[in-house]
Structure formats: structure tokens, C-alpha cells
Length: 409
Image (cartoon, rainbow, N blue to C red; front, side, top):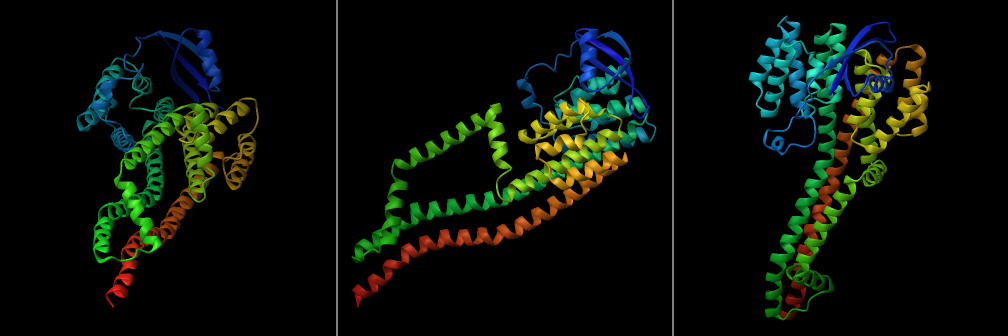
């Protein structure tokens, strides 16, 4: 494995440095062109291939996953230490001693040794893709090159916290109705399978004539208590497995992700969340001096919806040919028109960073408002749904009572 040390100049005239891995100088220059970088110097440097970056290691399952919150906390603490003048080696050692994740501690231990041997922090992070994503690495490398590592780490911490907040809002919006629906179905099945048969025995003893609705509920109860229920559960399980396998394929994921954007209420929420995340991340990367093509590649990789990710990837190709980003995204129709218009204004005025930040602020507020409105609307709907489910079972049990009273009289 060969690494190349690169120096280049950004569009704003700043000197930057980075290290990339490639098989030859020609492939290294192709990779730099793909990122939109014109190298001033390209120096070969021999390094050992990182043993932990290739393939999937089952042991990682036992070492604890790294959440966005963990990464944000790491960036925030490291920023505070660097800003206070603590040497980077001492900072990494302090961070290692505070980590509860075995995988994170291993990464920091290895990074401390490599940085002590003269390796850059960003390049040592690249050896641990299980811990540090491309977004983190790009910002750290930009901070090291510009001598503002503490500032870029602060931006990274804020960015990761904002992303985690957006994800939690989506999970909260989707989690509430799903939880209530599952509980309602469980209550319905419990009453249908265990309660209705008890009343059916009583009605038979009293010789009551069963109404049609009650008879239907009794038939449903018998069906659920028969072997059919096992086939039903098995069918649902197989169906869920097939859908998950289909979603694991590129075609399936694109189809389902495209469909998710068309779901009433939730599709709009997903689009606004993706817009806020896209603008916030791109603004942060741009402020740090990361080239636009590389920034778009990173934003594409962290986008959870493949339809939006494909649109960003296609737009990146058009930007590399000289097309403005706003014009390229406008054709894809994956972001709101207002966001595209504000991007276009930012490109025209040369204040793209500030404009993207404002768009992100706006849509983050929109997401928060949409989640509150959706929750307020879904609460009475779910209560009514639970009432209908429970009420239908009670109605089926009490309707024969009128026939019993008539029989007694």
C-alpha cells in the first residue's frame, strides 16, 4: 500500500495538505481530480496497510458500536483540550482513558502511537473507518491543514449533535404511532382470543341468540385459536424478511426510499430532515475549506435516503463539469424549491456558506414544528383507533345480553 502526501491551494487561496492512499501517482492524481483538487506537490510515502479497515470483523459486535452522540462528545472534548493548549498526544491519551467503548479505546490507542511517530491525526483516523466517518476525517484534515483544529472540531461537534437531534425527531415522530398501534393490536388479539370464548360459553348455556356481529367475532376468535394463526404469523415473518432482503439490494432500496418520500405527512418530514442535514453538513465542510466535490461526496455518503443520495451524486458530476450546484439540484426535485432558490442566491452573492446555514436553520425549525403538529394530530387519532378496537370487542360481547334479557322475560 502506498500513500501520497499532497499539497494544494483552495479556491480562496489557502494552502492545504492531505495524505491519500493509491496504487500509483497516476491513480493518486485521478483520485484528486475526482475530489476537485489540483495538486501543487505529490510525494510518495510508503506505509503499511491498515489491518482493521478491510472486510467485516465479527469481533466489532462485541466491542460496542459508536453512536453519533459518542462522536459528538469526542469532538467536543478534544476541541476543548486543544483550545486549552494541551498537546494532541496528551489529549488523545486523556480521551482514551475516558472511553467506555472497547473499539473506540483501541482506535485512540493506535492513533496516539501513529501521531507520536509523525503521522497526521486525520490520516491516522482513516485507519479506523468503524469509528470515524468521512465527514469527521475531512474536517479534521482541513483543521490540521489550516492550523484551526480546535475550531473545526467545535463545528464537527455541533454538526454531529444537530444530525443526532434530527434523527431523534424522526424516530420520535414515527415511534409514537407505531407503539400505540402495536399495543392496540395486542389488546385486540388478547381480548379476541381469551375473553370472547369465555362469554361464548355463557351465551351457549343461556341459549341466547347471537347477533351477526358477535358471531363474526366468535368465528374470528376460533380462527385465531386454530393452526391458521401459526401460518399467519409465519407468513408475516416471511413477508418482513423478504422485504428486508429486497431493501438490502440497490434496486429495492431505491424503490422503497422513493416510495417513502411520497407517504403523506411522513414523506414531507423526511424531505425536510434531509434538506436540513444536507445544508448544515455542506456549510460546515465549505467553511472548513473542503473542496466542493469532496464535500458533495461526503454528504452523499451520510444521506440515509438513497433517492436523495443518488440525486446528490448526479449533481456532483454536473458540478464537476461547471454546472452550478443549485441548477443541478433543481432538476432532481428532491429538495424544496425554497431551499434551491436560497442556494442560488448564495452562489450569486458569494455567501454560499452563510446561506446554507440559514436554510439549515429554517428547515430544522420546520422539522421541529412538523413533529409537534404530527404528534398532536396523531394522539387523538390513535386514541380513537384504540377506542374502536376495544369498543368493537365489548360490543360483540354485550349485544347478546339483550337477547338473554328477552329470553328471561
